[in-house]
Image 1 (spheres, rainbow, N blue to C red):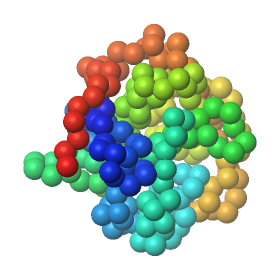
Image 2 (tube, rainbow, N blue to C red):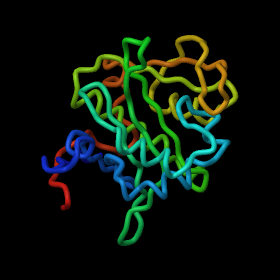
Image 3 (cartoon, helix red, strand yellow):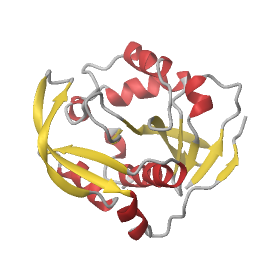
Image 4 (cartoon, one colour):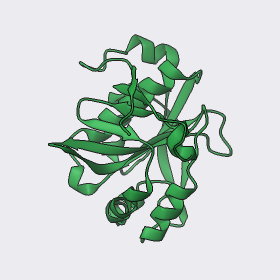
Length: 210
C-alpha cells in the first residue's frame, strides 16, 4: 500500500485524507466527480441493508451531500475505492473508519458495488486502511461489526485479523430498525503480530498526481 500526500490547495476532505495504493486499488477522498458512480452502485438494497448509514433508495443528491460534508480527523477518514484498469481508475466502493457517538474506539466500515463482489476487493481495501491506521496514527484499537446474516462481511474482518468479541445491535438506516450484529476488534499488538498480510507492504509516501 502507498500513502500519497495530497496538495494543500484541495478542498477539506481531499487535503486531509491521504491517498493509499495497493496492488489493485487506489484509495482516496471521494470527489464530486464520483457522485454519479457512488449513486449508481450504492442504490442497491442488498448493499444498503448490510450497512449502518446508507439510505435506500440512494440518489445522486445523497451522494452529493455525502461528498460535500466529508472531512477527516486523526481518528476518522473515508476513502473511495478505485479499481485500477488499463489507463484509468474505476470506482468500486467505499472504506473508512471513525468513531460512533456512543463509542470510544473507531470502527471500520466498507461496502463494495455488487459488480465487484467476489474479487477480494473489500479485504484488500480494509487491510490497506488498517495498515494506515496502525502505522500512521496513534489509534490503539479498531472495532468492526457484521450483520449475523452477512457471512461475507464477517470473513473480511476475520481475514484482516479481527477477533470476535461479542454480539450487539446496530441501527440500519435503510431498514429503519436495529438488527443483530457480531462485533469484532483488532488491536495494535495483534496487528503487529499478524502483519504479513500476504505479499503486501506497509504504507509509504509518494507524490500525488495533480
